[in-house]
Image: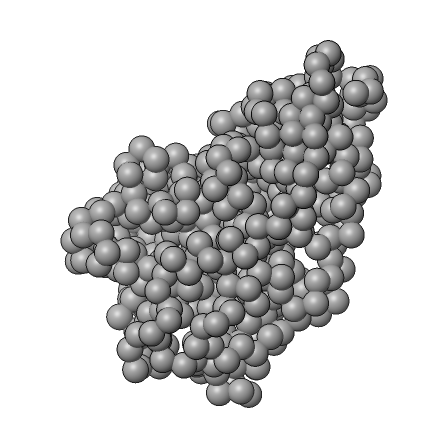
Length: 457
């Protein structure tokens, strides 16, 4: 293995090593040299005999994955190349093979980006609190030379095994026939959906299934309402029963009902929670603090134990491991399953939605009505230079109000009798993220506007 230490020191690792992954602009911030150093550092950090590597459809993926492989094999690790993969397919590979994994993707980011999501054996997370700083240090300082035999490289297609495993977790063979529109956003769902849906009673209407990392139709980021418009129009035009949208690496799933209306991820969290509780009565369900208050209410009503945690997959997965939770959901469209190595899978969430819909005769909007109880603002970003001062100003405005409860689990959360909001800083940008929920539209609007005015003043 070549000595990368002097070369890598010329790169700003602080700009690309994030809280949960490595991500940057190609080739300015992330290139073959950085990827090779990451492969060597990851192999040394894990001391693993084998590492599985997957990639999404971005044009820079093959070269970056090859460089990472060179770094890892140079440290003696054997590499299993899974080829084109969704992130949850990579998690499946890590779980099924019980080896660490590396997924080359920048998820929903624009085409000029790429990145590396890392996991330990069994799809265990690697993030800010679970090894990523140590990997960064190794990359910056240079991985010590390895004087043993280089590792080998083998290719393995795991798509069929992945699809078959998902279908064992959610029974779909006896559902009524459904017309399903899927917007893959030119991302990896275009690769995985045909295999997962094969043989099911589904009439598939595909949208943007062509793998294209330039994203010619719209950004593969369904959390932005503008990127859902094409799916909404197609559902209405075809009279479909449901619409599904995935992000670029297909680890997140968003839903549109038969009217073309957007379904909040919290509603899907509540639906899946009730299904998991029916299968495992009394189980624990994890939800992050941005999730609708309807979720813990519904979990309790169905005999489960809701547990609240911070935003972010490493916190969700850690809390699931600690509590033995069967399921976890986030407001951002990430859904985590105990039986999927506590990893997130947009495809598995989609299958649960299809099963719930197909097992009964009602349209999706009627089925989901019981899970939607409050009015939410969605996440709103505001540019704020002094984030701490802004949060203090908001807290000062509300803390002494009667009946108000304040906590700091993740940013600032303030809850009143019929409303709540959370204000938290971005990890990477001078932004404050605001989420508001209330019992009615007027209250939500009033609280939202007041909080935003305080932040932006």
